[in-house]
Amino acid sequence: MKISSFMRSNYNRFNKHNNDIKNRLIDKFNLNKFRQSPIPEILFNNDHSGWLVNISNKQIPKEVLSMLSLGGKFGLPISNTHKDDRLASTLEIVKNFEVKYHLLPTDLLNETRCAISNALQKFLDRRRHINHVDKHISNIFNYCKKFLRDNDDLMVTKADKGQTTVILNKPDYYSKMSLLLDDKTTYNRLNKYPTKRIMNKINDMVKVWRDEGIIDEIAYKYLHNTNGNLPRCYGLPKIHKPGYSLRIIVSTNDSPLYNIASYFSKILKKAVPKPNSFIQDSWSFANTIRNIAISPNELLVSFDVTSLFTNVPKELVINSIEKRWPMISSFTKLNLQQFLYAIDLILSSTSFVFNKQIYEQIFGTPMGSPLSSIVADMVLDDLESQCLTNLDFKIRVYYRYVDDIFMIISKDRLHDALNLSI
Image 1: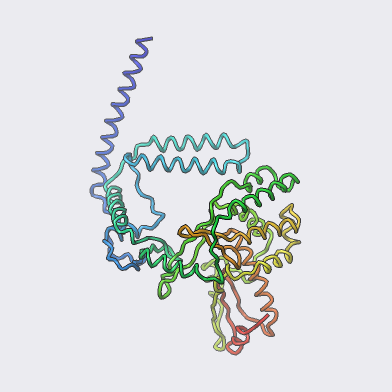
Image 2: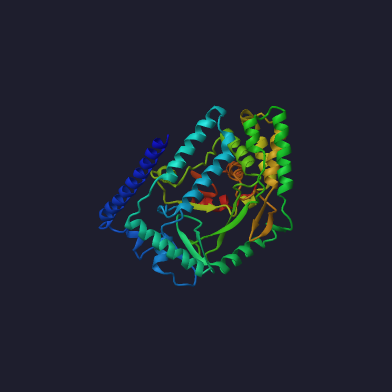
């Protein structure tokens, strides 16, 4: 027994020594291999205008500009010295899986958990050899962090449109956000969190559905709420407009209403056909109008809906659902009354937090809710259908992408179209 232990101990020491030598040789080989490799151009290119906009009042070092121009989705190199980062990433994956595991079929649960566990263990055990390019990126990343830490009156965010990163003064940001949120016609301030009341209503409702056999246990676990986080509000700079105004964005991820709003959004997207004016994206639009000829007496006109979500009345949403109920009812076991009660609960819960202050949106559909885009689209579909029907002439080309509208119309008919009332 002692000889066996001695042999095993020597074998383990030999393996450790062998692996250490092997890893040192690999490091040396990689250093020689990549020593002459060029640093990626974007890391020393002085022109970052396509990826980064500085609207602050400070001169930003080129190293910081280089780092931030890579964008928020850039994958930073991870070496053996970053064990805390590797562990944090692993724990985040485990947490996300355990929150969503009930969505998997029972017979696949253990197999999936084992596969994820093995993959994460390999990730933690793997020795990552860092080359001089990765080291350069890590160095300017650390420099960037220190600069932003020393200049805490600056903030970094993304632009409202595109993949551009924006640097701006933090006081300017909070001033613009306060100006928007102080609009009494759209928002009210609240003194306490309404999350407990909302969670109780959701949980009572879905319990009834489960007990009546309307939803199964998997759907019940998905809709039953244990998360009390309020939606968070932030603003994105409109760098394509003078003054760099902000667009308010509300993130409802992990909020009490997110799952149930997603659940009903999926039902409506399956049940409700696309409007006749529907355009998938800019590429589809370009291909659609590419071969359309424009006569001398016609105009190309584009316009958009101002603040779409905050201008869609709840009553019109209810009317749109009732109108389409014969189609919707084929995709749910809920009756119309139950369906509308849930929709009303989602649309009436419009509170969010910004800078530790709670606000409530007092009109329209809740910004950031997964349900808002589909119900707003239904209301706009009904509105444009009625408007186009009421015209005593036909608009030759009419397309809409969310809230952006494009049409080709005769010059002498433009005034009539724009001044139509319903």
